[in-house]
Image (tube, rainbow, N blue to C red; front, side, top):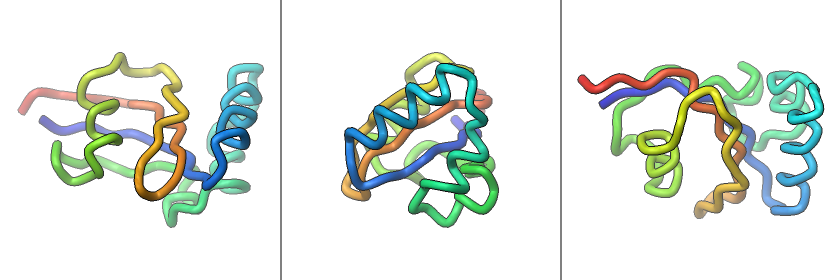
Amino acid sequence: MKASARHILVKDEELCKKIKQTIEFGADFAALAKKYSLCSSAERGGELGVFRKGMMVKEFDDVVFTLPTKILHGPVKSCFGFHLIEILHRENT
């Protein structure tokens, strides 16, 4: 399996919830990723590109490879902090 996704990573769960709400009210995901995300993907608007199952931490993989695409998921807690995840594409290969 492989997928593409984008995410926003922050240390604080409350901030993660606030960012999610802002996006749900129409704010631009990429702009908020650039502003808040602690991941190096922030400069690409949170875009992670294409990756295979097992390349990300388990909590991230569990979301990306099981939940519906094109929906904002999170907060998802991992050892890195709290993620908002949007699965852009997934295929069984």
